[in-house]
Image 1 (cartoon, rainbow, N blue to C red):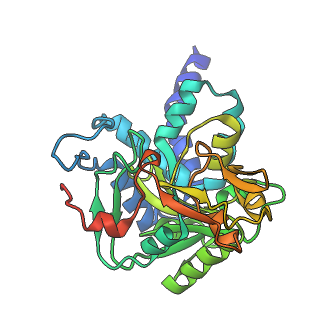
Image 2 (spheres, rainbow, N blue to C red; image 1 turned 180 degrees about the vertical axis):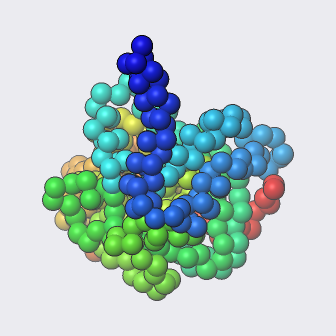
Length: 333
């Protein structure tokens, strides 16, 4: 009888023990930080249901139960508190995942490729952009809101994807959290810092020169909206690895496609080696772009010394995430 009581007591105390352990590990044994309270409050509070310009409901999940909201808040905390471990676990599970699981992951965690100019526009935003109608821009049923303020704060963070690799690309501090980064600044003080607009633009330029891809990332656990510009390299980025090696459609095209001018191409192969997606090859000593594979990042365009490569809008690739254009469109609250 005594052992039954002991087991029941242990089960009753287990949630408390887990909560204490979670607090010690997550909040480092101090009182819950204001940024934690704000983040949890935002996760639990149900945001307004996204609506299209014509007023009809956008696709997505309905408001969840209180337990579901609490789980989502916990999910967001874990993701933001330990991003490298979260992504590392994700990458280890990917090879074993069913196709249905891969699609579910893509719906909840995905990016939109940004050519350099559109990434610059987000960093140099000069008017507020509240928007929930991203159905055509971000072709996923979840996490399609974008809420940006003029002159957004940028917090730079050591790239969690690069930190999971044994020999990562350098530098590490290339992930840009757009908007409030208070939670990361509080919980990862040695790996994050607030930066100004000029430094953010300089990082974008330097990463573009390295041949890396600017990607606007959306996550269900981060309030179902855009939250970061990642500067992605194919050798380290978890999102690109998921897409290119495991068939998880986590990254959407920029809405542009590269185009080669055969009259200007000199077959130098700079674009072939530079393309992060393997979308360019030579045929008869001229560069040829594979339409289906090209994501419209613009890396090849910047590497082409003769101007033979250019980006052109392609409606079949989607609509670009251009915050200036979004800000001039009608928004349904």
